[in-house]
Image (cartoon, rainbow over all chains, first blue to last red; front, side, top):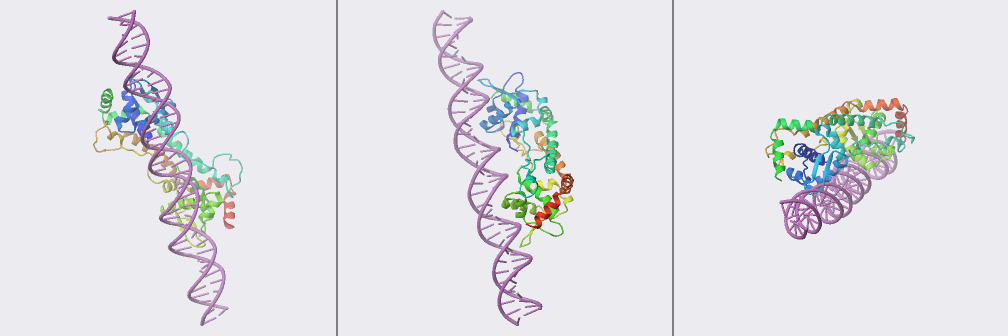
Length: 157
Length: 157
DNA sequence: GCGAACCTACTCGGATATGGGATGTCCGAGTTCTCGTGG
DNA sequence: CCACGAGAACTCGGACATCCCATATCCGAGTAGGTTCGC
C-alpha cells in the first residue's frame, strides 16, 4: 500500500480540526505541518477531490476542506480514493490457460479467487466501520491538546 | 499483491494431487501446465522452500513436493511466504515529525495505525482459516475430473 | 554375468537485466485580496 | 470618503522526471540414473 494513504489520513484529521467554520487549509500548510513533500501531497488530495471527499478552493485564501462531515467519511473511502477500487488480488484465470483446464468461458470465479475475495471483504468491512470522527475522538482522548495545537499552528502559518 | 501468489497457489493444488506417494514434480512442468514463465515460478517456489512449506529434490527425477499435509497449509502461510510478513500499511510515525507533534518516543502506535492493523488482522484471520485441502475439496466438487486430468498430464510430461 | 566408475541429462539455486508504477518535482490557469487612483 | 480597476500573490491542477521493486531471464552447482568398461 502506498504511503500516501497515511499522509492523507493524518492530514484529514487536521482538516477536521482546523478547517471548520468555512475556513480552508492550503495543502502546502498541511505538508509543512507534517514535514511532507508538498507537491506530492497535493497530488494525493486531487484524488480525494475527485472522489468527492474533499472540496478545493483556488485563490488567495483558498485551500482544502472536508466535503462531508467527518463521521460520514470512513477509512475505506479514503483508502479506495487513493489506492483505487481494484482488489489487491487479481485473478488471471490461470485455470483456463495452458494444457490444464478447458478454455471455456469462466462461469464463476475460481475457488482461490473466491477465498481471496472473502478475505478482502473482511478487510474492507473493518475499514468501512471506522470513520474519521472515530479516529479523531480517539486521538483527542489520548492527547487532548492535539486539536488546539493544530488550530493554533495553522492560524499563524 | 504480486501475481506470483496466484501462480503458486494453483501449482500447490497440482502438487497436492500429483506429488503423492513420494513422487516429485519439477517446477518446469508446473509452469508448462499453466502456461507460466518457468524461471520465475521456480524463484517463487524458492520462497516456499525457505518457509518450509515445500521440499525440493535436485537431480534427474527431482522436483517439488509439499512438505506438509495439504490440510496443514493455510492460504495465509503461502501469502506470507511470497509477500513477506511485513504489513501492507507501514506507519512512518508522521505525528512525530514536523511542527506537529512533540518528538518524544512513541509509547504506542497511533490510532490510524491501530485501525489499519485491525483490518489487516481480520484479513489474515480469514486466510488463516482456509487450507489448501479446503480449496482442493471445493475444486474437486465443482469439477471432479480436474485431479485425474492433472495426474495424467504430469505422468506423461 | 556382475560390479564399479564414468558420463549425461536433468533439477534447483542464486546472480543478473528490464519495465511499470509509485514517488517526487515543476510550471501554468484561475481566483481573491490589496493597493492605488479618480471622482 | 467611496467606487472602481489594475496588479500581485497565492491556490489548485495537470504535465513532466526519477527511483525502486515486481517481473523475467540466464547460467552454474549438484544429483540421480543410464552406460560402458574391466574383471
